[in-house]
Length: 188
Image (cartoon, rainbow, N blue to C red; front, side):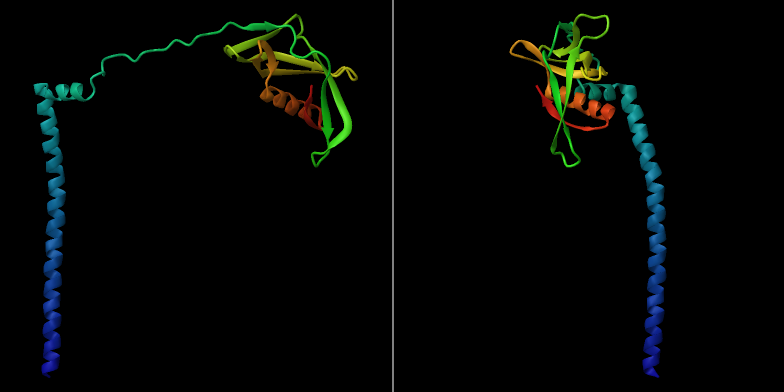
């Protein structure tokens, strides 16, 4: 019987400890929940007092000294458009490709055509040596189909304006869409 009595005493002792721990936990949580609003009220009161004294404005000006100054506005330099009579004289050739990207014996020929009611191509420049053509037209002399392209990238090389690599890529991609065939790089 003494063994059983020790077990009961241990159980009673542990139950009492758990109850006391649970009671302390409740008080700790209750104290924390009461402390947070009081701390917030204290902080807000402190900020209001500092603001009323003007100390807060002094600190703000010390931390952010240029707060009242307006940022400098850089003016964008607008370059006037440039007129070009021709970008490419002669034939512009695109080789037709098969499904695997191999060159076929079919070559598509095109010639540069000025925009309607214009005697030059107009380039909108974003720098001295780079810009885009407003409207670029080419015509297939065999079928007389005319294709128009907008915003084709151009660059100045050696003082002359030429269509940039990205511009030729855009022309080729749009031609492939219209003609429904795969085309290689232009052969100039």
